[in-house]
Amino acid sequence: MKAEFVNPFIASTINVFETMTGLNPVKGDLYIKSDQNLHYDVSAVIGIVGDVVGYVSVSLPEDLAMKIASIFLMEEKEEVDTDVGDAIGELINMIAGSTKKLFTDKGKKLSISVPNVITGRGHTIQRPTHIICVGVKFTLEDQSFVVEIALKEKK
Image (cartoon, rainbow, N blue to C red; front, side, top):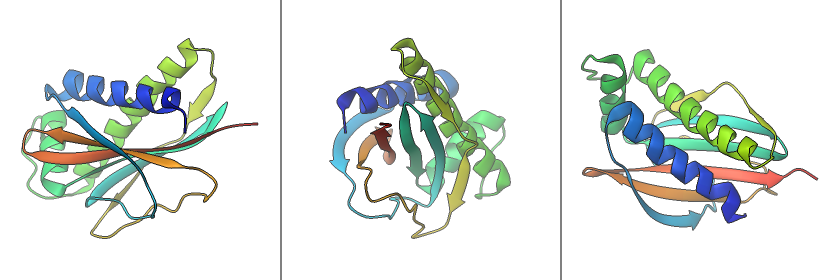
């Protein structure tokens, strides 16, 4: 996968976190994903179509998902409920929407779907085998989360 597909998602992730939560994620290692498993217990995925096709997902530990939801909702969340799911869905929506603008500014047309949120240990997202998925690990305070980008140029 081209760096020009991954870098806008990294920039958008950092920008959305800083702007919407006041938290400063630090980009860590990148990796090629070889399985369907997600790293953590709360994940959101959004489909992408247009000049590129695929998806982007964010996967977070429950504690971090609840912390982000608490900031968004301005009330303490102590369990993963529909409000937390909605907040993490909105998080991936903002990351994808911000990235869409970066792609559009470079002449690429794309649309994003409605986000889907998946919770629970050991959940998976099945992706087409012909699309390479690149994961980006981020550290936020004392926790980690990942953003995974699976995109392919449309021919």
